[in-house]
Image (cartoon, rainbow, N blue to C red; front, side, top):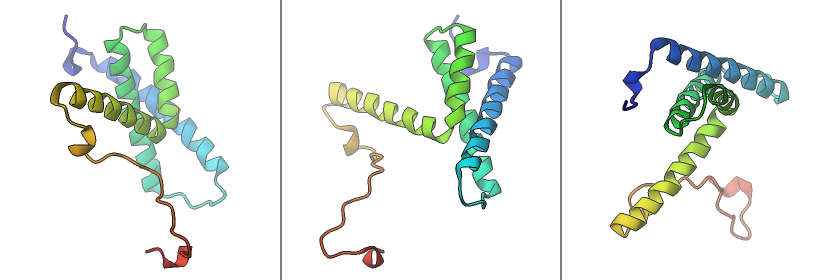
Length: 135
């Protein structure tokens, strides 16, 4: 049987999303406890929970494609959804590495030539520049 997103029951998606939300809420509450600034916007909450759901579904599909048993899949969904956006960033890095390999192997190109890389580093300041002069 070929697996695709429509081959799973509604109950399967409900437990994946339920675990993702539950784990995302726990991760979010721990994040809020560590923050010194008490201002946390509702948009940030929605964004973090949405990322947790997306990561949970991606983790479920990954586990299914690797034929990982259901109990281990549940554990991986919980762990991945707990960090939400951070895990999504790791998925993106893994995707870009694999995409880069495919571009080099089959097309003789680098992925950076076709897509924008995700460099999160801040460029170094030149000497004599202070924070006030950066726009």
